[in-house]
Image (tube, rainbow, N blue to C red; front, side, top):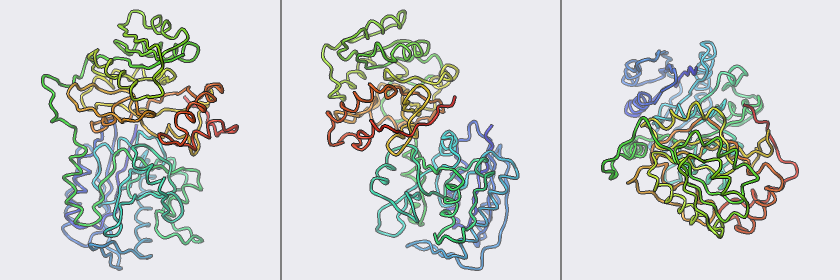
Length: 496
């Protein structure tokens, strides 16, 4: 059972603090037990009153008042002014929070700065990431008229490469060199000794750097999630962005949908697949697992030269199946194939679409949790992590193989009048329209094994296919293509 301490050392202007506290009130804590520890370090009496009046039903509230440090803390329309004395003082407050969480035996502490507005799903989502140290991203203009940059960094004091910044623009979970300000930390990491004490022989500036270095030395990789970015009220002028920010995370209830509504029971699922020459690979395992989960199936056979179509008909016998046989393969232009797959699938009038490739297998826990995923009205897509298996018992993880750190939609509610938009690329266009994530979604803890790389013969075939179809890496990553045949990949043991 997750027991999370939400904590913040606070010295904040009342207007910004009021929005921060409202954000805490709006957090979705379904399935979590969460208490609050707010440290009052304010020099404005109104800010102290706001903290003393904060309560949330079902949570225990801890309030500590600490006199402001004698060194002034100046915030103006340009930047925030810190010095070594202030930083060490803040580090001591954060260490107090970590020790408090450790002594009270919380499973996690969520350390969050008081000038952030959080997406309501932030804490639940970070918990589902199952990482010992993980932050939610936010972007800030640290100086006026400069680009927005993240509060996480790649290495060193604050090094950010263009590739690193591009990666953070895509919703997912990524390993980073440093983080802070909106961070979930596990009891395991606390027990191991992570803290904000300064390391005396390092001249890095800022308590977060020392925390991150200590965590890395103790063996805890650092991660940032980019699925639900927070809004940073770095300047009072940023408050003008709050309304627009909150609109971005509201469900799209206003598009035309006459006579349609989300159902919380008896939802029907269509299995949607594209297959080609899969008879002697993993297709049987995929279909046998999916069969009890779905009500109907749409499968496009993309010019198979083996018994793939017959295998589909055999295993799915008794389930309504639309099997479309193409005489020639179209996978060199994936967008055409995926759009045909989508159009044929929605003709079955599904409530949900389960889109799988012929080498993707869920954990067995899918059977016990699938019904609750589809029979609810809160979320319109369910995302899972996909592990690239290099054999039956190991998956690959290195610089270019990190698919399992990102949640991707595999299960999508079909909404008849939603304005679906596709990514119009010949390769890597996605199995669903690209704008489905504008709707509310859920990251599931259930994992998927991807066996597409598990056999040497398949790796060789994909290596040649990608370099033939995309020799410049225009639609993917050319360095990843080149790494496919690495004779000594970094493999990790799959643990059930």
